[in-house]
Length: 245
Length: 245
DNA sequence: GTTGACTATCACGTTACGTTATACTTTACA
DNA sequence: TGTAAAGTATAACGTAACGTGATAGTCAAC
Image (cartoon, rainbow over all chains, first blue to last red; front, side):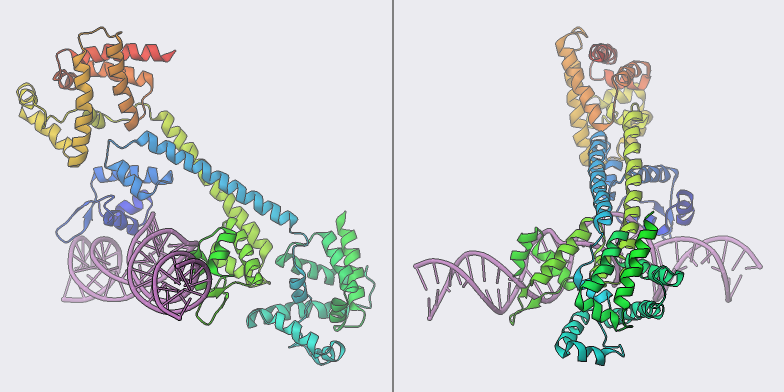
């Protein structure tokens, strides 16, 4: 049989057969023109190879096993078994750690990140002039310096996304925090934060309070509209309470 | 801090830090002479890197996560979790297959291997002449052709090993199968077989019977001494029965 | 004889560094 | 202050198991 036939028969690639030939793992006969011809015996050997491969043995070990009948097969299987068990323990630990991380990640977003998320970068924002007046150049420049650690594209993408979200919120800021419009708008914000980090509802509510308590955040947010920070806090509180049950 | 300090602090190699620098994952400041100097911030980033590495993330993904706050970290963790779970299933299957293999491997040594193990190769054996007389040249040549598929070194190593074992057995073949000498000698043979394959006691007993029933094996074995095949069968039977309780 | 399907041999790319090899810098000690 | 020891830098090959072209020769059919 020629390469392609064999490859399709056992479900591997032609390249793989070439490779096994290259490393001397499975060397078929060849025609005068150099075509590889696999015998029945070759196919049997291939089955063995694939069997040990399924068990996770490296090709070198398989080579030893295949062409050395005095090889300690039993021992090799036991060693391999141990290795696999250790691997499984490692995986379990990794999975457990991830689970913990997802759980305890509530509130994991640092203040420095929050500053970015809250939209401290007003360099592309029409309100920057106003910001400079309110905060003084120093504060704005320091903030921009921080935000500038992000790549241009990221800044743009991030800026556009929550600029849009904040505009939507500002647009409904005179409605009732209970209103559907407000609740829908704040849900967008909650979902966005949850693609970046992992916010529990309570953490979200706390975040809203911070928007009001922290001068920097409040002023920053209020640039999208007077009283927006307070409004957001209220909407976020309602959203939280509503969705907790 | 300089490389070595950092490396020892967090328990990684200097080369690893170099690597992270090369791929742009963690780029510290440098002195005029080109020495890398890691800041506190660099160390924090490094902790993050190592954290995600522990979770099995590839460095490329870590790079994305680290220097792109808009990266979907939560989603990444969930994807990673799924991958790890799939990996674990794969491992479990591999382990289960190995267990099955070890179990069902009883009697897994093929006849062709048995021929080798039983010592069909008498090309280096003083009895070859005799063998040719008994079996005729054809049979001996065919047998040798088979055995010659092994590498020279393997042949030698294998040949020496069980040549020795068979000689020892032949030396005690007039003792009682119950005798300590016979039992010790057969234990060596059992242990040797179990480094190559996996023999249960019952399989071992059956093997002994085959030595007698199969003309080829019997004649072959008896070349080490008249009646050795029968003696071995008896010793193997006793050994099996004794060790089963 | 020409085309299409198949085959062959390079040879680079991938992952995360380990491991020399060569050369320069800084630190410590006499 | 001179020198050796310790530390650091870059460069580049090696690893595992192929995937993925690129280029070229072969075989069977029309």
